[in-house]
Length: 387
Image (cartoon, rainbow, N blue to C red; front, side):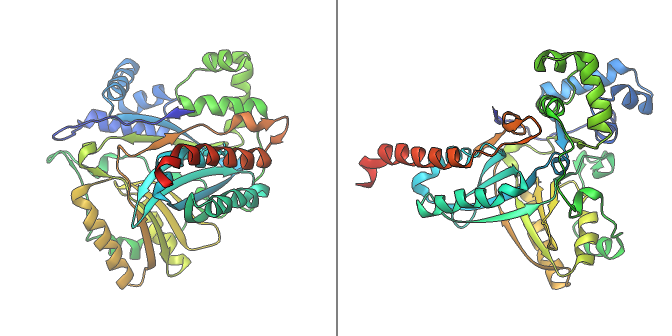
């Protein structure tokens, strides 16, 4: 587990030269484990590509993540959005973190104090997670919640076409969106289609390798072997013939800082479309926009969950554009939750400790007991305030 702290990065303006942008685009196209291929495609020495990537990372402008295709390791994504009792706001991350199948926890804002939790849970235990959340309501820790079942998140990685090199700024062309949707293709990638099942295609070694790749997408086979107590040859075999062949990794997420954090906003949208055709077309358009970070289809519905990254100056333009798409009949309705870069956030790897033998172990009774214990602890701490 690791605390995610973006830090305070204040810049008058963040700019990139063409070489950096092409390398960043290459990272999205070929992945951070294929530096040689990126270098060859750009006719650059490997050393130049590695140096530039290292420099961007050290400056806090670039982050690399491994995107596991959780569907193929027997896990179902649960997006939980909750209204939080402000009395428990200071401890709410600890409450949601009790069920250790979470991968991301984030404070979000709305009409009330809110919280976002992303869980990867074996499908047969969805009802158990729901019981845990209902008990949080009964204890008055949260007032209510919504759970959306989603596909794995589809990453949107940066491309040179989004950047105006003459003006040194990102391109936000809101006016063209309706026409782009009208002309868009409706064929979506498999990651944005409802899966038929959630097969477990990984073994223990695969899970341990995936965990290390989540922490560092560029880690070598030898380094992974040392971390998990195996041999480089065995790690290589599992990576090539299990992880790659069985598509246990969807792709790699390439995150770059586009705007100063003190002038940025990270809204989360749940957008409901009027029909599947409009959902598919609009989703394909959003997949090629600089504001989209990740997205997932809500299972069984024409709804899109989308995490965005915008300069504050473009936020109102995004809302007005969505309103326009409602009036044009593409969108039925939408809701949004706002977060800021320095708000509480935690990220962790897949819950590898809960993988035993040939399956996932969900410790429901332990989670419920831990919830009651945490509740008593917090109530005792708050007693002078509430009595």
